[in-house]
Image (cartoon, one colour):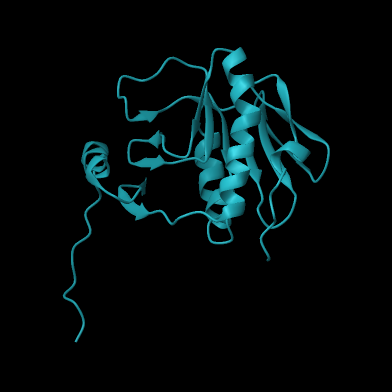
Length: 187
């Protein structure tokens, strides 16, 4: 015999933040519904570390803040994500538990999150007026994709070698540094 049906009720932002502060597991909030986040692979963790080592000095030089994995990004009244990396150059919001105005967001998708990172998060991130670029750094192949805002247009660029421009940081992401010491995951 199965469980009795339970009514789902979307959480308010305040309820979510209160629950998240007490939870041993991180959750993203999508249209008021919390979704638990899984742990990351070794390739994912190394890529995030390498990216932080490249982006950190560039962000500091511009007076911006770089956040890695544990800082929430509010993209709407009922949607909050934990991007792998984000750069914020705007003043912080009043609430100390999230950011709202990144100029650059980076995700390292896993096979189970790639569709969400490529569709749902792509359009929600690009809806933020402050966002100049969204980067996807892959774990199964040496490939980096950039969606960047140029005026009213969204431009797409992908590369498997060399460097990729970093919107808002006035620098480049050398793929050799991003993938240094990273054993790619088997597809």
